[in-house]
Each structure stands twice: as structure tokens, then as C-alpha cells.
Length: 221
Image 1 (tube, rainbow, N blue to C red):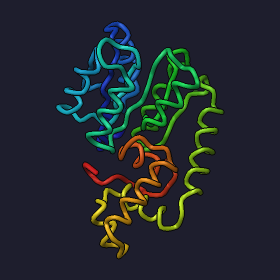
Image 2 (tube, helix red, strand yellow; image 1 turned 135 degrees about the vertical axis):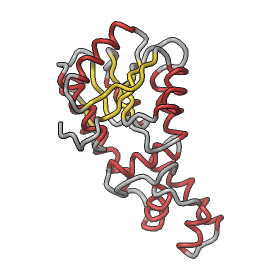
Image 3 (tube, helix red, strand yellow; image 1 turned 90 degrees about the vertical axis):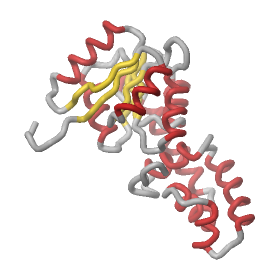
Image 4 (cartoon, helix red, strand yellow; image 1 turned 45 degrees about the vertical axis):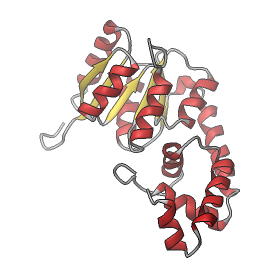
């Protein structure tokens, strides 16, 4: 790694200290990744994330207290630009799809070869989605097709409001920029949420990023 390049700052979340130690060694031997925080449960992970602001959060799903999916939801609700990578033994297509739909930027099975975790961290840091080959690539391809179909169902006005909202604009901003009433924007927002099947603002932003509707996230959007 060039001396001018900062390492990718990672937080590891897993309730087994020995497992975390192994992953720390794996990641840090690359030279371009540094583990800056570790947590054994979701509550601690959320607090540490606020304190350390890592580039990538690598989390297991099954932990005491709040699990990885709830941690994902809480982190993205606070900041839609957070990058969370799910790394778990539980790699059913349903869980993979749920994690990706919830805004995870990647999913790696603990049964996959170790280099896939390293590749996933680098991909997440670069803003790319990653799914290891072990975790049924057709899940990712199917999700992409479904997202494309949902996006194509938006009207031109709905798509423009979707783009503005994903950029971090408020409903009032949308109304002003498009010269329509706030009520009209609110009605379109409801239709957009239903058509895209997004649970909240963070998932909407990540859908827009994945499909090239926007190029980056405004801070605290």
C-alpha cells in the first residue's frame, strides 16, 4: 500500500471473540485494511459506530440482543451513506435477499473462501455491491431484475421525485423545484414507496445508488 493512501477502516461485529480475532488477522494482513473497532453485540456496535465512524461495518446476523439486520436498519436510519457488509453462516436466499433489500452493500457466507471477505470489504468501500460465489449468484441477479422492473413502473414525475428524494431533498424542496403542491408530492411519495417496495428513506437511497439514479449520498441525507 502506498504511504499516501489511508487504509480502509473496518468495524467487526460478531459475538465470538476468537472468530473476530481471526478475521482481524485476515483483513489486516492485506496492508490496506485496518480494524478500528470490534463489538460482540448490536447495541455495542451501534454505539461504537457513532464513535469510530468506520468506512465499512462487517456484521454477523445472529447475536445476543439486536441482530445484524436490526443493526443494519438502525445504522442506515441514522445515516444512509453507511456501508454494512453481512458476514454470516446463515446464507439462505431469503436472508440474503432481506439483507440486500435492507440496504446491506454485500453478503458473504462464512463458508466462502477467506479472500471473498477481503474482496467484499474493498468492494463495499468503493461503493459496489458484493455477493460471494457461494451465496447463489442468481439471488443477486434476480434482485437486480426485480429492482429494474419496479423502477420502470414509475411514471416520469414519480421517477423525478424519487431521484430528488434519493439526493436528500425534502418533500418541500421537491414541490418547489417541480412547481407542484406539497400535497401532490406527498401523494407521489406514497405511490413511489408502494411501487418500489422500500421500507424507508435509507433503502430508497441505496436502491438509487445501486441503479445509477444518483452517484453519491449527501452527508446525513
